[in-house]
Length: 464
Length: 122
Image (cartoon, rainbow over all chains, first blue to last red):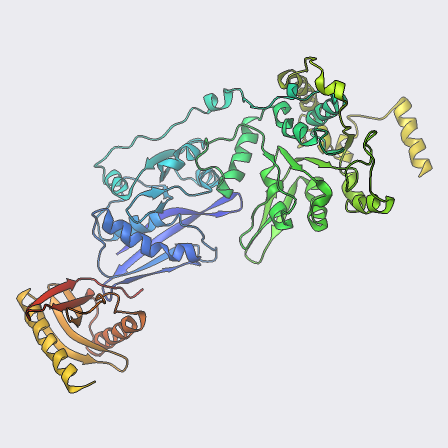
């Protein structure tokens, strides 16, 4: 008997509907899975058999051919366990699919029949909703994520037995609903605050300007001057996310599997700070089936690279293209996938290998050649793409000891939000979000250089 | 294979046949050979065609029936089963592989361990 049911494959940030066909015939016992399955999908036959038997259901006799259509798309991951199990049970008429048309099944089975969460539920459900799917049956742990999609009934299930009872109409499961507004309205709370940083008024001002326009920043200063401390507090002054932005980021985290165990929607701008030994693939994204890298995980947030020149040169150079385009296309033999990468780059470095080059008190022990070599790791085109270069000097004893009250992150954020509002009005109707992302031709009419500015530009050009 | 162990094996299979008949199976074939394998007993159990592998263990034995069925042994059993189905033009019948193990106790009595649906083709 032939049974068909719906599931989905993940391709980058898009889901593609997959039809799971289960055909059974009498003969030697066994099963085979076709339709370009990867190792995790092929292993599912062992999980499915154990899960069915351990759920006090009968694993029907005979040979099963399981086809995942369309056959030209590679299927990866364990999310087909649930549809395959339901298909096998349905072919032996232990479960009826009549009550639930237009449904997709997503879930990994554990050997005792429990349904485990999978990654990528949010993008899959979005695409499924657009393709006309009305219902989705997922693990209870994925339900919050799936419920973010409008016009889709989400049925959370904990184990195979429960799913079978639900499909047969013997158990009632009400669709899972989450209050999107409530999720979104809660004011983000941070453990860190700019008020904790003493002195460094000009750096704070620069970071505030950077946050307002989403400009890239390079901070140069001796060790102990507070570069990292300042950088870690940048997310506390960034403007809040809009719903669309939050969903975009959540999709990326869902695909990477970083969402599990956290709240369903990411409402804070991401702050990523990869170590300087990270490879270029780790930064850009890649793998056999390309996955998002750090630049994409920092999308609409901050990518902080501490000890900037310590990164491999290739790693730094691969940053150039996403810095320019705001997206990155990773091509591999299996697929070519474009991930968004509109991030604000924050880099921090010492002025020389010993760190004391610009220090008025301590003496630098580096030879001029050594200092030059240090800076040579950063190419001109890369430094060109960083709008603000800030010097962070070592604080004097009096500044460190002073008890003066500093501005809090909240006060700064209010100014940043005000500046973003102006930019929103300025770029209304264009794809640009911030000053840093202004593109030359269409935006030229927005800020025409005039008077002194115009003369300055002209003199600059004639000099070069 | 020495004469002694062959006799022991036959003895075990006789015992297995008696056991299966007692359980309501009807024995169709004994020691069925294909080029690559041998099936000890082929029997009918209701709607099922059952291929039975018989194992005999002395009380000293440390192995278990399933651990002694390595992949190669399984493959040869599957091959023999396929040959049997093909040669006898049997289609549309549900099949099963069973393992029937006998443990000989010190006093000479036997304990049977019947593992139904012991392994699958793929």
